[in-house]
Image 1 (cartoon, helix red, strand yellow):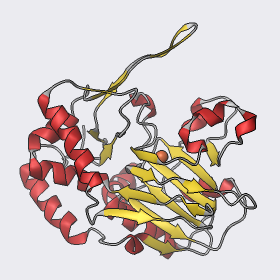
Image 2 (cartoon, protein in one colour):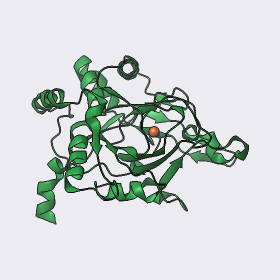
Image 3 (tube, helix red, strand yellow):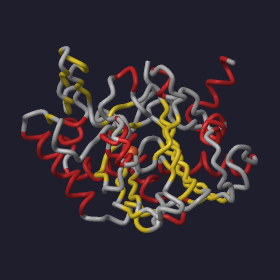
Length: 306
Ligand SMILES: [Fe+2]
């Protein structure tokens, strides 16, 4: 059975308490998200506590370190200290689950170049893997910067709990519509042999078993079908408006070498950029089926069952 959750529309008293605490504690500036760490691969107890506390408060933390070596193990070692263990790519043969994100050379023409993360173009608001089936929902992610772009490549991130709060304040029916299991559908994609990927329907907001809230979202308008009814349409338009309006709880951030983001797959967008050819932008991205450990929710139970 799932723990009682303030995000459940049938728990108005829990919601009211949660809302007051959220508004009182939510960071107001991106700088408040930053934790200085000596080495993300081996956090001190205090560094780890600071990252976990930020993730519990606002679903994301930004670490800043002097470690700029090309070490693909870094995100894996960092994640393991924060409860992030199940890398998504365990599902794919011969991939280690940590992607190197860089502009794919044009002349290469390989499959990577078809996907937007491997270009320098802007990327609209989305959560990672929004198109995945329920069994492979991405709940956590780490993005580590080895080298930033010569110019641009600025990210904006938003705590999805703040999106939820703003929508619920405006109209609880919008939240209800976005929690419907058929709110958002990624149509089937066919190849020459037939259906390569069946249609995937799912909610925008859903509750984890520990009562935490997760979000699936894309601002793309192609290859996505929203449920065709008024509350869903209005809710989706409201999200677009919120994010376009640049509220103070949307954080703007430029990752510099040695910095990175740990997050419960919060919605994010990225501006276009221009590479410096002598040192092209390189990020490592790890996607997890786990969310960042929340010691407030898990500690007592783990003590009993361990
Ligand atoms: Fe992303």
